[in-house]
Image (cartoon, rainbow over all chains, first blue to last red; front, side, top):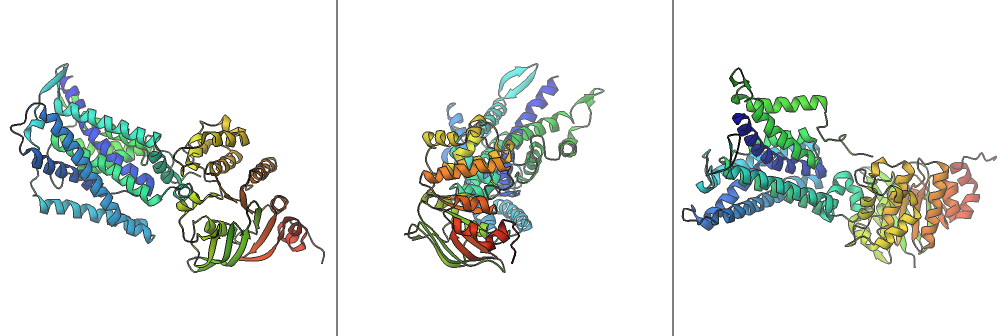
Length: 315
Length: 238
């Protein structure tokens, strides 16, 4: 039981990260019908960007007073989001918009995306370092017990992470369903030429979509870095998982990405560790396998994902 | 002076010339019909006027100013509202949200105008919270027109509003177009349904393979043998 709760909490932590990243994939897919494979590097850039800024402002933070930690956390979240937004915006300008102008085939976008992904990841490796386990100042990692359910401990950072991620998702949901900006994004996603007839600037809307998705991904990079470690190749696996989560929930569907992310995180942590005859049933080494097997199984039953509607433009 | 002057426009899709020098004009307060068979260039003409397509040759003047080449999202702020062929409502938005989309160029949708639009189309009021994709074809056409009205058009471009609709609904929609015109909106109507379009229009132009071949008042065209033969399906003894 204790193990179950511990893994559930770990699953929710990772799942909320996947969900934040998945939103970036799904938002961009909505307006461009394009999988932005470089989004995993937007996530990575958020970790480095926030690390650099935190380091510049507070150093290693050894002499930080107790109330300083939340402030540094907010600083990190903001600078991660800002870095992610800037990188995602530039990505669209450099790698996608020129192709769109020339009416390039979908395959060209895909190659461009993969190229940018390698470029950004290697650039970060060159500029900073290629250590695989950079860490944020240790005060984020204190495993202070805040609450204990049936013996399972939730650390401050895990709780903060889940709560922050959920708040950001609620905010995005309101933004998309209730504001003019959100309506313009949905309009372009449903029918871009008609949205233009309503006075919506398609290029601007696409840029804004990349900025929103990038900010969420960058913030996730910071959060992930505080809970685990970060490196120039940190984006790959969470990126692929988040993409899987977006497909699982129904690509293009915002609530689907949130549900898909949380579900994938929980399942990949609970299933391999489920006890059987006194030890783990499948074994924790199979975590990634389980994640993708679940994806395949769900898609066999519901090819358009959990909340997915039929793909392509509705008439 | 005409509200809209189209002067010798040519439009190409790659190597194919869809319009070969089309010229016509629409005066303020008129209903002008563009008639023609499939592929004659009616929709292309209208898309060029609303900025969805760019002419390779020729000029379009609106209110005396050149507008060809201006993108669609800027033209709507001049009061050119386009109801595209096939209606193109936003299927996953509610009726209310679709109407709000029509008023996107304004800071806020005009509540009084919305009430007026819903008076014109009472069916939409009943379905105000329903997703537009679940509406019938006729209701979607009403929504598409209502949405365009929310943008306060001075020139309303209507592309095949009767397409695929039952005769009774077509009559309703044409009655409403007349009403909209009586409120002072200039209408450029594209139709295959020539008899009803000409009964409504002040003037008409007949397009054939990218060129205007005939022009006249609605009554003249209705009486013209060539129009009757080509578009009204009447056998003419010659």
